[in-house]
Length: 193
Ligand code: GRF
Image (cartoon, rainbow, N blue to C red; front, side, top):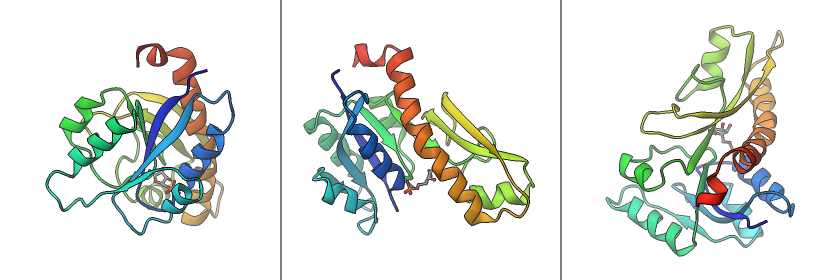
């Protein structure tokens, strides 16, 4: 199998990045992680780039043309797929149009419910019975694009933010990898790109 060269965008802890790197070591997993982009030079997740010798790019979002720098690095590293894994920055319409249908995101709720930030707090406040995560393509609207996969669990009595987060994130690791396998098996992405 020819693995798709993938770039993972992060802003923080990078536990989804760690999981994707781990899965990508399996010879039958359809992607390899070839580049990591972050808007946060203190992102803990950058350690996974360092210990795995994966090239990384720290961008300064205060600079006007920072997205051009990213596009340049993506081109140089022959990246054909982008995984957003906790990237806390809005991506411009122009950038999205360059990578249409090639950017996927993971969100810690059952979309279309609870788009945006502070997801866990809002889920608990609404006393939801179920929660989970969603892997989806991104489009111009926030947390809105076509859904690739969702997984859910029932929220137990007494769950606080920590429990909800822990449960959601362990489901995210499985979901991200399964979503990539699903794209590989059931779409023509791998043939086209
Ligand atoms: C994940 O829970 C993801 O759903 C959200 O940001 C979080 C990132 O966590 N978009 P990590 O950096 O992968 O640990």
